[in-house]
Image (tube, rainbow, N blue to C red):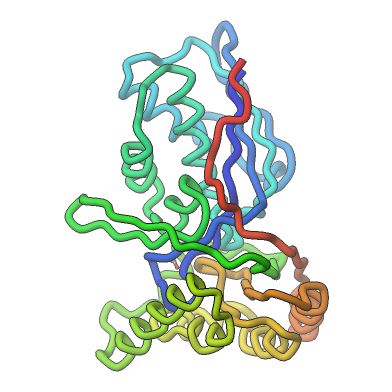
Length: 300
Ligand code: HSE
């Protein structure tokens, strides 16, 4: 039996649209075992009622690519998924499924894919490297790819930094959340984001959280997505007043992520309450960054 654990991720963090992502200590686990024939998929936890249990399951589809590439497709496969990551909420559940499937299959069939190959394959299947890269590598990752050539680096995180994540009880697909984004932006907005993304990374690396309020602001995607999330601006203001250093959409939403170094429970309470006042039921999680990415827990 092979068991792989993959962290949740919060992409973008405001200005780092499509290039910045943070792994969080909230995990999905993927178990693979051989059976004589066929495919059996069991799912527990988040999304258990709605996720497919056949060949259209994303974990299986990702694994299948690895089996086919290695020429070693197992006769029978049992997959067990224990999901801690809410589905369709901007916390990287698809990235975790793809990474989990690839790594488990890589071990099972001895395909010998390197981390770089896993990253490239996962990005080609899932399409959001700002989720894929931190899910695989852990920590806060800056990622870019130019004509297929991937570059990334990991940013040091200050001790005591935690995320308060408010998770609304509705799903927002990334595809829908990208639909209203502009194809062109002004130079002014581009400069707005470049300056903040640079400020955010440098401030986190130095442990200077005082500038995160400015540094987590964005003009490339959040203004176009705000209307899809009732209470968006109010929840951000309330979290800031309660002590959050900076607040942004997590990935394409609808979850909001507040970065803080104190007052975690208060921030969680006001985010939940402010969402409620806007007619949205939300739950809040206080999560430390996950310094490690996906890893095999057991190979028996
Ligand atoms: N960067 C992507 C987006 C993340 O904002 O659309 C998808 O989770």
